[in-house]
Image (cartoon, rainbow, N blue to C red):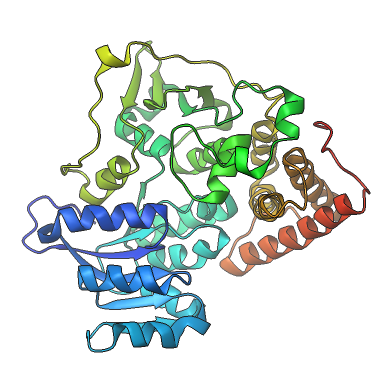
Length: 409
């Protein structure tokens, strides 16, 4: 299925899932800059009716959908007289994902993005995938369905998009390893005890990227890099031991591929998500993006270091979950989402996030609940189990049944 802009007579028809979030807003910005190349079929948001309405009007969307049913009347009132359809609820979100289109930008945060992403895949769409949870929770299922339905998965995450740009599929057998880079986050130089006692305000001060709250916290703990290892495992024909991570504070080199002849190919760019989004939306062509151009002479020095899994055990935990299988990675994501929310609400400390997640996975393993999900229902069931057990673990910290706020386990 060729969905590229190359030799197209008509604009590319696009659905944007999560249009009011960080990735969604950057996508909308790109569409506005290339109005003749894209036609917006549908925009989907969680509950931000005001921003959704503005986007839908500006882009002339056919349909605007809000996941929160309580905001439907507000959306209808805001779109009155525009001719833009308004809809709300989980079913409406999934329906929008399956509307006739050439490409679906899947940018809904969390496990809530799994069902609509899978719906787009099952329609054989090109999916610009920014919802990492789809692969972390059910990567095997998503990739099998993509193969069965002829869907094209295009990775939006800056690191996976970088690998996608330099990974020679025809020479996949000659790849020795791939390397994902991490900025190191705000705590790169902090001690273990300082990290464990970090406040939400400190954890949200990412040095290079502007992102949503959860991904920013996960970047501070390096859990996000662990998720990206799991994603890469599903996106590329590689074994787990071929996936490596380097800390690169400048966030200029986003991904590298090492081949058996000694060649190490890297993709470089300014830390601006519009570059990987544009690469996916125009693939295999490229479109102009007003990002800061790199001046390597001005940059002067690029540095790299190995991640410290003693200070950042989330990365090691994610690798362990990958080795345990898809059931463990689904629980990893669910438990982390609850633990991060609890940390942001100051119910637990930063140093408690990893112990909460580890507790959930180990409890599930003892109960025999680590089976790989073979359907959407099975994946969502695992997600519910993970969330419930994470809430119990969070409550246990409050009751002091276990805690790591004074240090890592």
